[in-house]
Image (cartoon, rainbow, N blue to C red; front, side, top):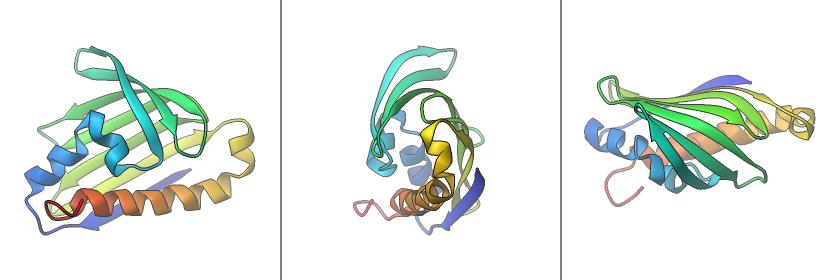
Length: 134
């Protein structure tokens, strides 16, 4: 499954990036992630354990590039594997998903894509909201 969603914003881009790049805050904005625990950090990469709101758990490596305002989550195990990238640029926040579902999750992959898209739209709205409304 590969898709991209974009949300324009009128608030300070540095504030949106601060929210988007706060690894420990991911569950606050991305409600599909129930919990996230940083296990260790290595050369700017956070190795994390994740519990998903829809069931299941997995692991991922998260890296951020402050200069490019790009957060990359590489899902290495769990109900899906692949990459999610979140970028803040030019008055918009963009999320790109490129993941493959595994096991039983593959059977309902069409439903999953709709669910992921909807969740992504809502997450981007929370990231782009004015202070205090996120």
